[in-house]
Image 1 (cartoon, helix red, strand yellow):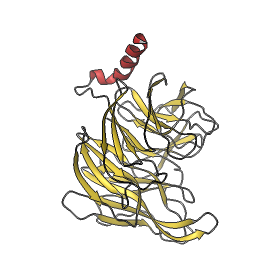
Image 2 (cartoon, helix red, strand yellow; image 1 turned 135 degrees about the horizontal axis):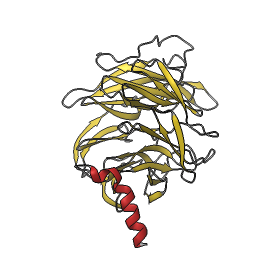
Image 3 (tube, helix red, strand yellow; image 1 turned 180 degrees about the vertical axis):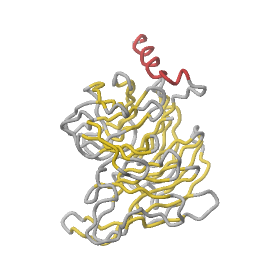
Length: 351
């Protein structure tokens, strides 16, 4: 056991040993209003903190947690939702109450400004399922200023349910992808006072974003973007959203919407879910457009880069939020640590 523990610490340290700040911290936001800080080197929970009181319902999960330097930005599922900013020790620095009419799905930091994206439910469009039409909304949050919300897409009978969001590497644009009865992605110029996509968006019957190739996760890479398509291909777009090429992910039986990008090394990672083909963890050399199976065993949702040479994911038997977080080795795909937590996992983020 001692030898195994030493090997795990060595694998975790990886590139972090060469860094001037070799932290191996990870953060997990829970649906019960709590946040925990994980010491990924030792596998222990370092800090627990209550950020708010939340309803006892199965929460949505996704891009609701961001680590930016010395600060952690958490989109807490209170009613209405709250953006809570803490330091890395999870001491609360600020709280911002967000508009109650919007269900927020994610938070993004771009050029020092915080953006929360979500949807505003409207009338019921499917009485059988209870599905409602929904506007897509982006809210800009700046210290000492009133929050500013923009309707980026009007419902027009569609459910604009944002699945993921990301800022461009220069912080000038925000990418949003959609899922459910809608699909595709939009790019939004953040220099404009009113945030909206560059293509026409208000025509009835439109259910695709400006860039219909995208389905699932979109992430910045270089001067452009890398995104999943829901199938075996990944798609590369330039900064304007123009098609640059495709990469075969290597997955054959997966509704692929899993993507974590290590832009500095030019690689990406995709992880199979635990309820489709269970095809494991793959690494993608982005510029070479090649894919390699790392390990077939692991599976999970909400894949993200972990600290050092690790990845983080949430184990779940279906598409809903799970209660178990795993740390994986990027090089071998082995599960280095597993944390079984006291609530549903809303988001994970490494630092």
